[in-house]
Length: 351
Image (tube, rainbow, N blue to C red; front, side, top):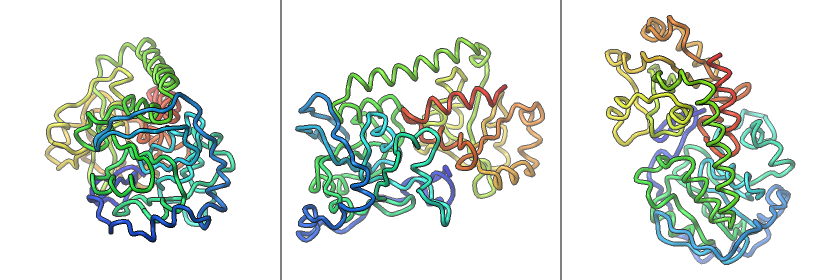
């Protein structure tokens, strides 16, 4: 599931609109000290304190946040921040439900991806925002009694940040990020690492992934001469992702050239739906399709796509999103935990 910063009901949905919620009342703040939500799944996480160097001061898009000591109860309000937090050995007590959980499936699919399952173990975090919601559930967040809130890969605005800050110290997206979800994955990882007092460990983990990408470039010098596009089939249209989107960043990180004309058409968006007369934009050297089986089958019946030179040349990699190995989800999340998995699977897909 991968596509939504607009009002998408399909895969990988992000916030569809600016956050708009009622102000926190005195009763809500009083709930911070209650035990009502501290039982069951949240406490079962047994979230250990993030050992590291404290206090730390983090500058971000909404101001400056000081974290005085190692947090014991961290809530993730960013769509993929829980995975980055997990990479540092901390299990969030609250997280975003990125992908709708299949009916009747337990545990939640978002804790069962191949790259996070072992990290979560038996922990069952509370869901504080479902993909497609207007904004986070402030009351539930307060009831979890967090001592740190991470909202980095997030579309919260200043008003939402102010409300979260009344609950606990909150770290927003990076200061340099002009559009939500546009920061390089490295910046997001280092930003969260600093908030957890793990700056040095963050640098090491980022460097490990960069070394892995460099090894791919060395092993596949041919990528440097090829233009690649990641896309999805959405609302009966081919929808490519920009070079600034995490999927595009991953492809260029592996050595491919990006299709910058897509960036121009998308403007400030992370993707764009192509009209039939602009299908030439994805007729490049290599295409990576991210969809689950039903949408993939539909795309394979779309003549304007199957008649492209790249399709006829067999240079299209069809990657399942949330089904099977969930390579698409790993690409879309682009975290310290998912990237090594995604890189290996992408290399295998080009054979």
